[in-house]
Image (cartoon, rainbow, N blue to C red):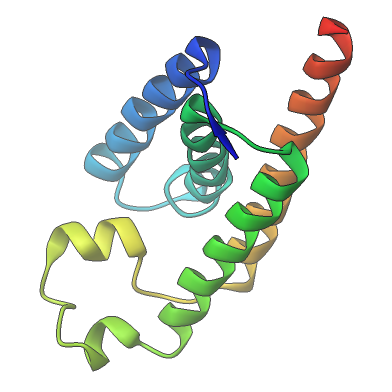
Length: 126
């Protein structure tokens, strides 16, 4: 791994962060809040990592997918309650509070899409 700033991925990460924040604050229910937000969050994390680290896109994608699955299964086992941090509204928004199989599917699709886009972009640069 080499640290290297990537302006394009940084801008994408900032834009996605703003979108995710708006979704979290403004929407309380529905497809965009519960599914599309999960789709976007893995793309946000991927872009954030690619903003500062030069690592294989496949390794980043697998890491992001693994991380998102761990967080989702933490919801299944209600680990926020177990560690007595469920009262924290910010942590509940960031980490979520309910397990859904559809979230795992959204994470998977988001990871696949950003990986395909990144790999195609790398090919175009060559």
